[in-house]
Length: 293
Image 1 (tube, rainbow, N blue to C red):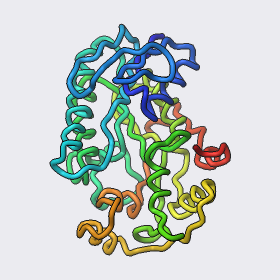
Image 2 (image 1 turned 135 degrees about the vertical axis):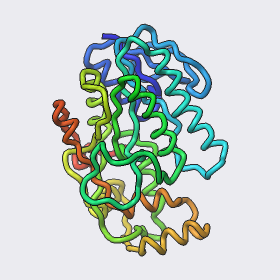
Image 3 (image 1 turned 180 degrees about the vertical axis):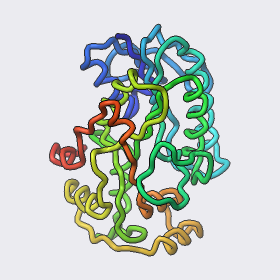
């Protein structure tokens, strides 16, 4: 089995590449930098068509992430990489199975009731270019018969985004959280990596990928702080007040998207993936017991 993993030098891509190598597959790491295992095939997703080395399965993890200002150069790069890079990859991957790692950020964030299924709208309401560019990228992928995975808030060893940003929000022993405690789905990177490899045999379509059970936000935050030796008191700020302060530029380092991600309950329904055999074996407790890095 020859598996090409794009973005294999990144957090999620590296986990997929390692899992693929552990399964005995020949791994091709496609991207600007070499991955942790296998052979490197250089690719600039922002402007080139990739060489996929005759792969049987392509797991497309390469993405331009971040919560950037509207109209910025960084946001423009997200469309160049996430949308147009995906289009070029699909052209190069004809004849191979493709698994696109998307994001739950594609879902319209406006109010809804109950867990989010794959049928939830993805056509509008996005709060940043990342979610919008990923939603647009899903369209050609689904049209081409790919499998699209939608994880939420991926965490694990070597996480460069989620936990570091949380720790950075502690100020003088206080961590302010918008709104009351809510339920949230999170996705362990190990669960995502296993899903990526299994999904090559799933029927085309979109699938939510998350840990077995949702978490309570405040309990998760408290556990993460303790695991990193950070003592902080959690303070609840009304979500409307937090959002207004961010929009007015009174709070540095936060955006409307970040406030929304913390203030709104987002629970993913993973029934569709579980029907294909997906089982979330990793969870936050295991990650914290292992000594998070």
